[in-house]
View 1 (cartoon, rainbow, N blue to C red):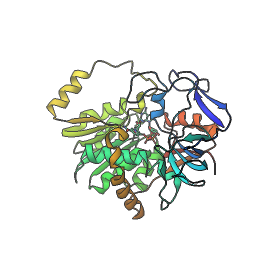
View 2: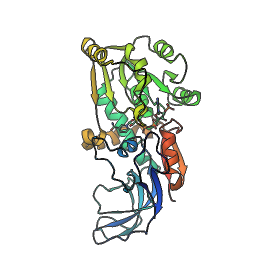
View 3: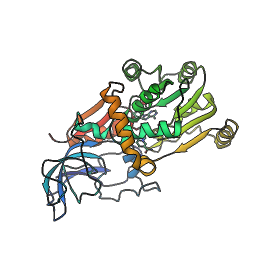
View 4: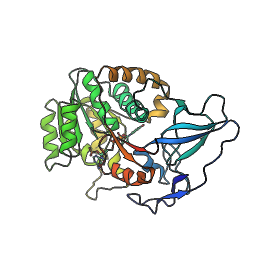
Length: 336
Ligand code: NDP
C-alpha cells in the first residue's frame, strides 16, 4: 500500500522531504469495515493548509499522517452490511492505494453518472462550492457583472457558467492565453483576462465598463488589488479561497490597507462573506446535484478534467496546482 505522509511541515512549496511516499501493508477490514481501493484521488488547494500547524476550520494533519483527500474507490472487501464488493463509492481515503472505512461518510455513486471522476469535480465538492458561493452569497442578477479568478479551474469554471445562466456579464481571470481562450470560447464567458499580463489592472477595467457587482474570490493578492477599485456599491464578495497566499507568499511592498478596505466596504455597503462548503452548505448538496446534473445533460455546462496517471505523481501534480500548471479539475488516476 503506497501512501503519501506528512513527514515535515513545508515552508513554502511542499517538497518530497515534506511529503514522503512510503510503503505499508494493505490493511484488512474487521467486522463493520470495508477495504477501499483508490481509483481516483482529487487534488485540491485546501490540502496545503492541512500541512501547516496553524489554526483553521479543520485541525492540521499530524506528522506521519496520510495526506487527506477525496477519492473515488471500489469496495475491494466488505464486512459491512451496506456495501458489497465491487461497489463504487465516494470516500475520503486520502493519498494512498488502499484505505479502511467503517462506512461513515461513504456515498455510493449514482450509476447514472457518466464518469466516476465527475464525483470529485463538476458534480462533487468543487462544483458544489462554485454553485453555492455564487448563488447564495453572490446572489447574481441578470445584467450584473460577475468576475471570477482561477476561472478555468474546478470551482471558477462552474461559477462563470452558472453566472452566465443567470444572465450576467461574466469576466474570467486566468493564467495564460490557452486558459483565457478556453473560458471565452468553450465556456462562453464574455471576457477573459490574463492576470500575468503586465497591464492586467487596465485590461480588467476595460472588460468591466459597468464596474463589478459580484467578485467571486478564489485567489487574493494582486488579483484582488486590481478588482478592488472596480467594485460597485452593494457589491457581493463570496470569499471562497486565497490560493495566492497558501504557500505563505507575502507582498513585501504591502502597506496597511485595512482602513481603506474597511472604509470602502462601509461606504459602498458591500457584503463580504467567507464560507466553507461542507460546514455551511452540506445539507444542500442534493439541490446542487439536481441542478447541475440537469445542466450537464442539457449541455449547458461543460467541464474539463486534468488527469494525472499514477499515485506516485500526486505531490508533483499538487505543487503544479499551486502554480497554475493544472488546466481543469486536477485528479490523479490511481488504478483502473
Ligand atoms: P483550480 O482548479 O482553480 O486550480 C488552482 C488555480 O489557481 C490554478 O490553476 C491557477 O490558475 C490559480 N492560481 C494559483 N496561484 C495563483 C496566483 N498566485 N494568482 C492567481 N491565480 C493563481 O482550483 P479549485 O477550483 O479547486 O479551487 C479554487 C479556489 O477555491 C481555491 O482558492 C480553493 O482553496 C477554493 N476552494 C474553497 C472551498 C471552500 O469551501 N471555501 C472549497 C473548494 C475550493 P491560473 O493558471 O488561472 O492562474
